[in-house]
Length: 221
Image (cartoon, rainbow, N blue to C red; front, side, top):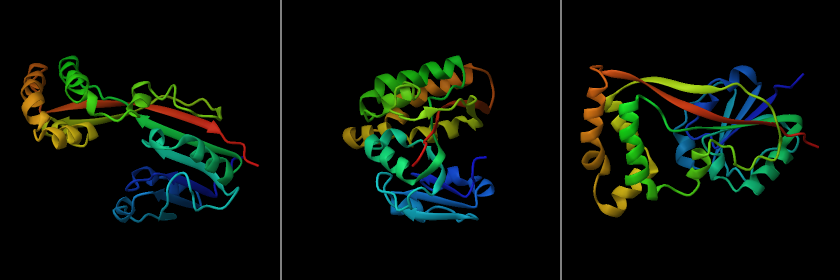
């Protein structure tokens, strides 16, 4: 039986992904390279928040039963991180890494936002975005993979919620920085509002993100 003594949530950010790990494991280490992110994390039972980069984990050898990486694996130096994964994992340990893809709302709205994603801010995305665009299928993952069910995220959003989400995109922020202009307000919002209303009079709509998941057995020493 798989032990549940220690889990490591790597690149935890503000700790969203560790919300339930403490219910299944005796202890959880939630790490991030950013001091600010960890300072903004909410304290949780059995969870120890700490600061260190993914490639240099301050964790004992052969001690971790599960490693989780949410929306971050594509940023890592793969060889260095996987060396740490093998070092800290118990024999039979598991690593699970996932990312969410581009959302879907409706044919009308999706057509507008996909054009914005590709044609307006496309060149401002970092090169690592290719791993998400390829559904994590070609991301390096040198472990014996374990089958996993399909997952997705569903939310009910207003048009205002959706517009606010675009400002979290790194490509949008880079566009604003380089062009001193807001592409969401000037180039997206008019067409987006029209598509939102044309799709039916509804203040809130269902927004769905696909989850791309890699799960593997580490082995350990």
